[in-house]
Amino acid sequence: MSQNQTGSKSYLFSIVLVAVIGGLLFGYDTAVISGAEKGLQAFFMGAQDFTYTDFWHGFTSSSALIGCIIGSSLSGLLASNFGRKKTLIFAGIMFFISAWGSMCPETMVLAKGEPTLNLLVVFNIYRVIGGVGVGLASAVCPMYIGEIAPSNIRGMLVSWNQFAIIFGQLVVYFVNFFILGDHVAPLIQSVGEGVNEILNINDAQWSINEGWRYMFGSEMIPAGLFALLICFVPETPRYLASIGEDKKAEGILAKINGAAKAQEILKDIKETMVVKTEPIMTYGFLCIFVGIMLSVFQQAVGINAVLYFAPRIYEAMGFNNPMVLTVFNGIVNLGFTCVAIFTVEKLGRKPLLITGSLGMAIGAIGVACTFGNPNMQLLCMVSIMVYSASFMFSWGPICWVLIAEVFPNTIRGGAVAIAVAFQWIFNWIVSTSFVPLANSLGYWVVYSMYGIICVIAAVFVWKLVPETKGKTLEDMTKLWKGKK
Image (cartoon, rainbow, N blue to C red; front, top):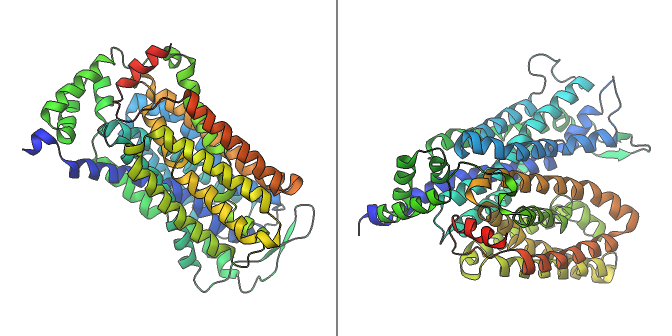
């Protein structure tokens, strides 16, 4: 049988491979701050025109999230009006500008190496720009893969985006480690009222002056590669059909699915696209509510309390090697993401989400019951691993799969943007509230709360989320019209 009749899997996989670099950059950009933040903090503590307090450091460490909210909010507008491909090119450019600007925020205008309030403002602007790239990529990469992929392997291919995110985080951990090399990270001690002092200034001088710059600048390599390679992938057939480019759409569908199947798919696409876009609420409140709550629960289950603060948690448990455990946790996360990739088309989306929710609930309650008890240190660590691993085969990848495929064609751009914007908003809420809540209420209260939310998430999926396994994107139009 000719390739023209069956389509080319190598062509499809090459396209997806380029698209998931956007996921890798998502993980890389959000994790790069973990290695750079101590040197960055010590650098700005040397400022003469202002005092770099804990508040400033907290804001600087999380300023990229502001850009993430902006980028995800704009993703629907850009993807619907300029296409998925051009939006991803723009995201790649944002990544590159941010990496270069974060490395050299002086930009030949401000004095090199002189920490000032103006330099801090400029640095945060560059981090926000990078966040815009993350926000765009987080919404449009799964959308792009979902619209390119055949329905029988769409879930698996979209799940690779989550694998790339976790892989990007692991890559930057190792990159930061090699950049630091034999140099020493600065030791910073709190002296009250949000003011700190540096302890080993002489040994850490290189890390303070240069180390953090190289860490941020290292992102220019994958960012430049992504911006270049995305220029060579096609636009999605769904978008091309929506703007009347039927021949181009059929040509791409034929390369992926075969000529006969391409005509059938294009016919289904055209039947659901009488108009290019429709109002967001065309298919009813429930359609948008399900998409938003998938995003809200993905963050509200508290996973970033582990991903962002793992070293702090393991240290609080009493372990002497928190970074080693953090890396091991990352490897476990990568392995369990693969579980989703290879089972999502066999088991379906809902069973994985429900099982993962209950696994997370068990892990979270396990942490709540054992945290702070020296005799249960090992059980507490295992509970953290169960909690994290359960997320990685369920809510981590499957949420992105559903957001990419659950909305009808004519509202997908705008609906995905709304859902992903809620995801970043709740990412920020969980990330900023965890440490204050843990310090004031105790870890057992916080993890008990996360465990309860996990159970509620399982009920939500069971009762309201439709199973999309094996369905075409065009089937979503019929599904939601039937629920109105």
